[in-house]
Every structure is written in C-alpha cells, then in structure tokens.
Length: 109
Image (cartoon, rainbow, N blue to C red; front, side):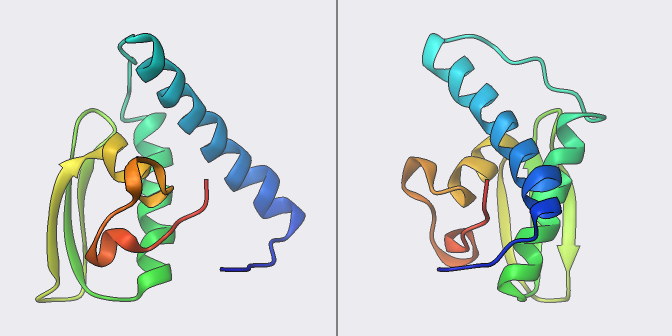
C-alpha cells in the first residue's frame, strides 16, 4: 500500500512509534524485561489503536493486556479481540507475520 505522509506526520507519529517498537524489539532480542507505563507506553498504544481503527473502519471491541493496554470499542457487534498491547502493535506493524481479520490491517511504525 502506498501512502503520502506529511513531514510532520513522519516526525511526530512514525518516528515515535518506530523508536518505541525498536525498544520492544531490542528488549526481546536480549531477553530483557521492558518497564512499560500507562502514561508513556499506553499513550503510544492508544495512538496506534486510533490509527488502526481509522484504517479498517469496522466495529470492534479490543482488550489489550499489560501496563500499556486498555479497553477500546468502536461501533456495536464488532469483532472481539483480546491480546497483549505490545503483541497487538507487533502484529499491526507486520512483525510476527501480521494477523488475520482486523489484525491484518497494516498500521505504519
């Protein structure tokens, strides 16, 4: 999928997400735990959820576990998803093979 991004979107959104995801990748590669907080990491995940929801446009109920997680809903009678917040982001970014259903909606990192 080809998209055109404003420079501000690239700097403010994509680079922030990319740096955050590399933090998760690095910790995973060396077997280190990551200290996640709702205030910092949860805000990044919430931004990813909002972007993902705009991209697919379907109703959903999403429960993300962990300190960066939360409960999200759009519309009624939508697909129900339950997973870890970091795993959710990894799937949307195309890491770990992506996902199925609404989780197949690519969201840039």
